[in-house]
Image (cartoon, rainbow, N blue to C red):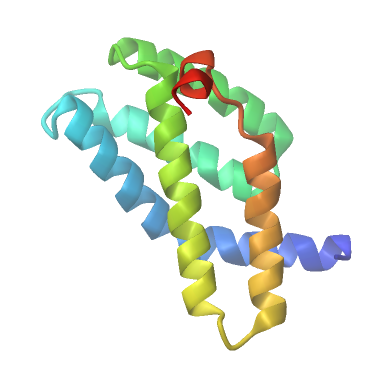
Amino acid sequence: MPRDCALFERREMALWSFPIVCDLIGEHYGRAVGVAHPFLRLVVFAHTQLWQAMLLDDRDAIRRLRGDLSLRLQALDLQHAFADEVNDLVLDELMDVVTQRFHRSPLKASMCSHILLHIAKNLTYSPEALTAA
């Protein structure tokens, strides 16, 4: 896929997937720490920003946001394995949406699927998540 095309597809996907990612991440963190937790919005914001950076393939932002998310997970006393589980859920949901949304446009579905596959192969998993799998 040419770089220009890939960048356009990544930006477009980051836009339409943003509400989906926000809802999923917010829902799972809310269940884990409670919707009234004072730091809930901060960790949800950090994790959704990480997903935006991964969709856009912004490596500097990914590196920075992973560190930020790690600190926020510690503040909530959550393990990295929890964030890994959330990443898996988001990845699965986005793949389902791509399959359903672009079933009549195989080229578009293929491009979006390649973006998600690239993200999947670059996700870092904690040792706890790997042993649980």
